[in-house]
Image (tube, rainbow, N blue to C red):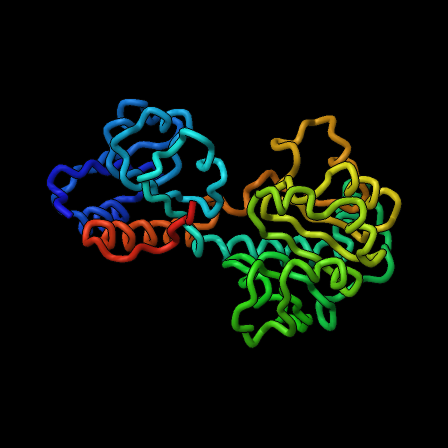
Length: 316
């Protein structure tokens, strides 16, 4: 592809080293650096390529955009009618977030297994209390729903700590060595009663909306833990509150909620044995995440200008 007239708009927080790497992949292109909060509609309209997540309303009038490379793994916000032209290539940053998010998942699970919410509350009251028995990942059965980059990285870490791993994905593929069983979603209700922990790292869709509803939460073990780092809509918030407050579940770690942001008066905040983080596990807090995003962008920019196959193309 002739890159002399190519206008590339970069919206993720690129360092000077990142800029050099990107510009080396399309030496004749013109690069503009901004951010989702400061970018102008004119900059979006003039771009042939956008690397990062622009405001969706600015894309509706963009007839020039050839390729949008998101800095997020999630892309559902960009699939609405009229946001992107049917000719625009859409790629995401799948593969950048598995390390960071899976560590949060391990952290949240172990905090609940070791009763850390109880001890934090006791610490604030200056009480020297023993919370009693705890659980271990060693020998636990972990049901991993969603076996992309994040699910795989979480499964690796849980397996290394001695867990039995059961994976659920849309289509059966070759089973990794660190997975004990691999199934498709039609087996979900059979597998839920076996699990000591259930993790969700799945995108929003009509199939995943309230996947964990009252019925399926009731199928889980009484002391099981639910982890959700995908989309808040995968879990029925009201049903989860009831399950936690009745003692039906052992706990929950949520980085995503429904609705989001979670209103201050929402009952989830005060549900029993819950840990909530404000959708931060997949951000730029871990420097390695940004390095991986920059590398994906650079690799795809090289492929785009050369007319070769690109990574992470979203099949719309």
